[in-house]
Length: 265
Image (tube, rainbow, N blue to C red):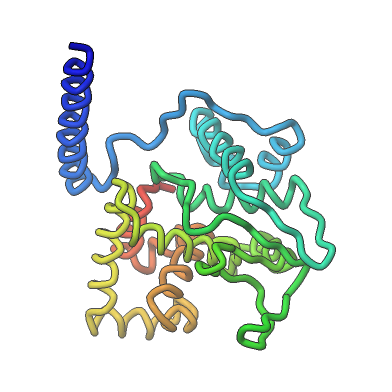
């Protein structure tokens, strides 16, 4: 009897899960978002110094409501616990390094339910530009899926937050690559919505008249047109660094990016 009861319970739970998944998928198609994004049985917090850094040095965090600040801090704390931070060439990993790098990733994924990506497990930081033996060139940063690593020159990472007028932000750029691959390969609801909207964006920008308008505007730097990965990374730099200008120049593209990230400024 106990076995039958357990089988019945598991069967009922599976049936409800399937029904829920179908309904949420339909909901996502209509409203471009999952039923819920934030649900944490226990909300984690940063220690006093890390919290001070987050408040003092990360502008996006201060734009959030008090409730969303708690969710953001929880995600930053969880991110810091999950991923390994590795300093190279005698670079010292400090609370500032951890908080600012974690906050950048969380900012991009804050509208997604799943924010702990599995396509990397470590963050490698050099003090400045580093030499890559693979392609015999100096790098400021990269996402290496094969090594499951996100790599930064700290000097260039920090430079990305010193001004927003140039729409150059190394942290946003590299985590955009992480988000891009996660969004196209994962099957959770947020990733499915991301993928759907991303495909819509690609369809629209590849229409010859739209593509010509984008290129001729000189709004996005020419590097954006290298390939689809660089295009997404560059437009996300604009989206977070100068949203008002982006919205004014290309309102439809801006709106689609917002839906893709389930994000509102």
